[in-house]
Amino acid sequence: MPAGQGGLLLRVLFLLSCALTTARRVRAGRTERGILEDIQELLGTERSQVINSRTPFMEEELSHTFEALPKSGNHVGAAVANHALHRLFLQVHSWQMKGLQPVAGAWHEHSPTIALKRAPAKLRNVFDKKLQQRGLNLNELSVLAATIEELVRNEADVLLNVSYQAAGFSGQGGQGLEASAAQEVMEYYMSSYILGTESSGELTASELQALHQNIGSYPRWKEVRELLKEATAEVAEKGAELLHFQTMSSVLLLTSDRFARLEEKECQTLKRQLVAMEERPGRVLLRDFYRPALDQGTLEFTESAEFLRQQGALDESDQEARVIVPNYMMADSNCLASSEYYSVCCKDPCEEIMDQLEASLRAPSASPSAVLSAVQALPEAKAQGLSLEGELLERLSEVASHHGEVPLHGRLFAQWLHHAFPRDCPFPHVSGTVRQSLAQFQEERHERAAFAEYNEMQEIVNLHSNTSTPSDAFGMWLDDEELLDSRVFGSQRTWPWPIAMLGLVAVAMLRFRDRGFGSHSRALTIDS
Image (tube, helix red, strand yellow):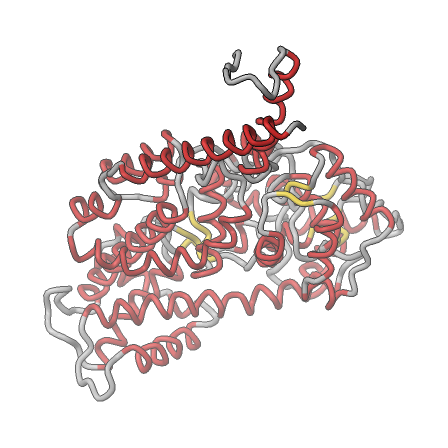
């Protein structure tokens, strides 16, 4: 390139950088009403302060996930926000948030503000407006998370008030209670938490008393009472003679989180029993699934084939049906409906695997080699001696062939993870092909339809007891792709702006040269 043109190129780059810097300053100079100001106006100063204090924690928890999510600019849309918040609350509290989880296998575009139950409509509109305009940035998503958490706590306080009344004490405005009385009140609360339903927040004192009388049927009630005592010892001020409402509220939130861990022990026991019956990793023949109930009279593993199918937990790619272990573990029948906002379900180990991959790759997509390196570095891969060879390697290349790279948040990669970790990662069915709501299933059929009758189980065992049909490990593989946000995936693979500008200017210079632009010309015109 002649010296004059080289000098002009540098001048153009300089002017472009100045223009971009000026544009950034103009944007930064624009002021807009902050979300926290709206929250303070709608929820009050005290609750706004709580949300403000929790936002940095939420932001820290979300940071590397947010970095790896598909974004438009630095903002995420509704489906991506749902995914991020779903993961966040599972990790922080073991909450399966209602309205944020995938429906029938798909992350839908409904607003994450669906989780703002009982919040003022104006508050939902604040977030919805930003979602519609350009999506949520990391800070705004974190504020939304902290707001949802505060609303959950408010619901818990409503139930705590009813627990006071059920135990014969005055509510939030009353005096503190001695340790034994406070323990009784909190036991009423936990009775509703464990045995209650989505409408527990609307229980009357008499209804809660009736519920509490049945808590003895819960097999781990003694352990729950011990959790309450341990949490009280940690939260209450040392030497305090009375426990006040807010102290008890904090005790109950801590106990609720630990209750999820208590239930997870039972989930792991269930999973070990399934693994012991496996035909191959992640698959249990349906006839073997029913044998404990038939031979030993156990209450576990009695779900009907129809229910398992609707829950996405049945592999029927071969002539003999098999139960998909991780899909079964995540089925509604293994959840407790404990709140209007969330359920406590078995832990999804694949969420932890994805979290580690996002932290390692820090991008919404990556090359197959980068993905393989990240997967091989996972503790789960090392523990299982995972071999990323043969058909598993070929299938990952197929996933990349659809897009040029491997999108981390697509159905095909989730399907690949299921085959890499068949005991941990659920099989991702094509959206709309399964129903994942126990309540909806029971509404459409008799309540007992979710569970198989003895004769039904015996018939399945007898039908296949003398057959042996090894199945194809990839028999369920489908090439249907579904991206978390297909609109922005292609825009993720962009050059840093200075390099991009160099390319644009180089193209422009070539156009000028072709139109007779020379080193001695002082006129600069660009045709559109």
